[in-house]
Length: 410
Image 1 (cartoon, rainbow, N blue to C red):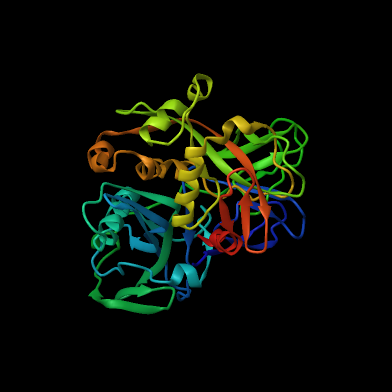
Image 2: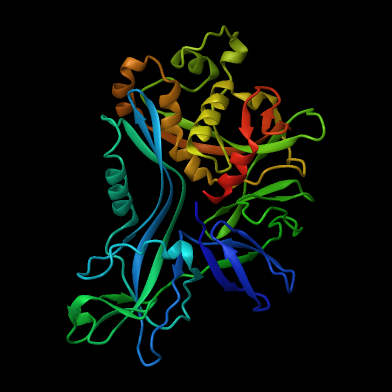
């Protein structure tokens, strides 16, 4: 598991700062100003160059994906972890991939002040991601009923090159291939663009009351203890999200966050707990008030290895623990929200495939079913800590402590 490292400057005082790819809350060690990193879509990075001073650079784009591919098979679910990059434009002679450069070198955020020409991507990320899925699903048994991605870290990497008599890799200051150039870059099929993108460093202050927001450096959700509110990034601003916590839990417990996701589901009746009992063929008898409770998908709001993630998501979706919750912020001992709700939503059909019955009709049913998320909220559940695991108090579900610690780099 690897993490991109980024060199940047504090937007307040200009002091140098080293960030990791997973960082969202930045605290400058010099001026002590805390900022939250926001972008309208995805982050863009630039590799460092060693070009001669008399040569103008152009930057070639590469899509990068780091995350887990999930596959629903007739026999169950499977997954593959990926950390790959691929050229985002078709130009003969250009390297198809950057290899391990993104993981081994310190990058910088793309900025409008950076000199050079930037080649426009001609392949969308969705097309490139489809190619990734096709390539890495070839070793799996067929048929693949459904595929999705989880814990995705997607970005655009720009690698520097320059032209002399041929193309040169400006990272190594070496020529690439034997392709000779004549004329301008435009004559050789290069179309450049002016980068219209930047990282927004938003003050980590509550949008409602102006109080300091709290959170870990990788946290996607920040909390205000003054007005008891929680805030989640939406585009280039912070939006309020409902946060629930377990009632009357004993002190000294550790809290893990989960997304509760309400959905509209086609082709099957799955709106209440009673519907869940039927479609999952659960060995339970429920009375009318319990059967009428709203059904919600549950998914961990923190990064975790795919197998453990799917186990927890399926278990808590079947448990439907929302009746034990009350609106509240978590105690200080809690894990940060590190998985976006959009990524959790990607896994819902795979979670459904894990408990849907009968299994002999799973292929036919998954083909017809569509899931449309309509509302989400956070739930913090208490876990008791032992030597190796965090154990959920009500259900007994365990999360290995080492696994949770290592998963922060996914």
